[in-house]
Length: 151
Length: 415
Image (cartoon, rainbow over all chains, first blue to last red; front, side, top):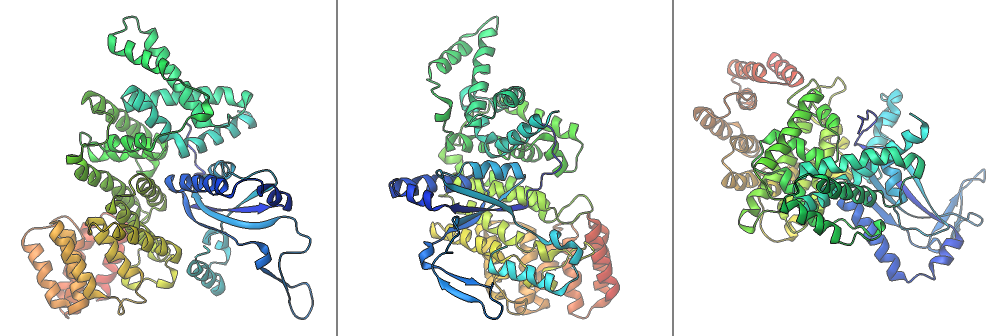
């Protein structure tokens, strides 16, 4: 194959799982163990390819709460999911691949059913803030992100 | 090249990086020769580039490539004018094995493991092992391997072709080693991976001191190996060691590109999530309960540094013990030199200097800058500045890497 210069094996992507209400409803028809097995096999393939850096699933949105900053004075905290948002953030993977196409390929293999979406976002690194490299907070933020493990 | 063709090529490259090794591995099991297997796979890739822009990318692209390559193998044998019995039988066997729907193709981990051991076979020299491993196991092109090692592309292509010919000429079977050879051969595989990593961690060639690209490829290879041989503590130990060392990359380079020594690194810049992965990998190695080997011990030492808040708060006594354990496993003078550094931190420069002088008296590491640079630092701590400067200057003259040389000369001047 032809040489590829845009390849950089350090690029990390976050695969963000989003499910609509319909997808969640449809998934109730699938035996839970079947879903666990499919997802387990997918995770195993990521691990065995050496590309998985981390990831987690999220508990149901009913357990969560929302802090809304739209009011002028104080943020408003409400229990449960967003009222009118139909795509729920259900979990994520962080993978490290050499190209965007490789990230797309991995994302496409995720065993998700209709109604689900996987949003793929490149994780920024110091080079994205190169113009502000001297900024004290840019430097600190890099450290914070790493300490929090969200890097 | 149309946009469609470009898209297909990129997708194909992605598929190849993910599954090229498994495609080659399952073909190699069929034909018994990784050189031939790779040629067949590459022919299938050419077919894919011709057909996919029109027909679309098949759902299981790797299965498609394997099926096409396998058909080429059978056709090739049938076309031979004088079919010898061996090929005739092989072609027959391949036809008999029900190919089934291509989507059902499932690569076998054992084949990939055979591929790893074959690429690192001791009949090959170290350079050939490294090149072949990155090419067939890592799924890199010869161009990419050449770029990683800063050699001309034709040189790398030649190296890979020769490696395949050597394997074929030596009739190396496509097998994992027998039990009595397993440990030694596995150590060989691990050293190939670590060699790729260390070339990235402390580049001996070029003016860049750190090569993230090489280190990342080595880490990926290490994680793949850990997935293939989860029962091997040393594999997890190697992954842990590489994670710990790579976690320091953000702090290892000064803004001007010069290396920063461990003692001077800003530890808040170390990659915490990577350290966590290292801790987990080492815990997996220890959980197997089979004692610590070469890489596991080095990982344990690296973990002491990675989890210490500062140089002063590092558990140097523990590091000395770990180096002593390592020294009983290996008679590597580099280990002795590192033990000397640890001893100097735990008990002061005098006992450390004794270890270094013993190494020097034995004529160890004659061409390495490491011994005089460590000796120079110890002498400086003892206030013997004249000798210290002399050793650091000697070290600078021996250093292969321009950045390292500058740091040593600056240190000598500062004394």
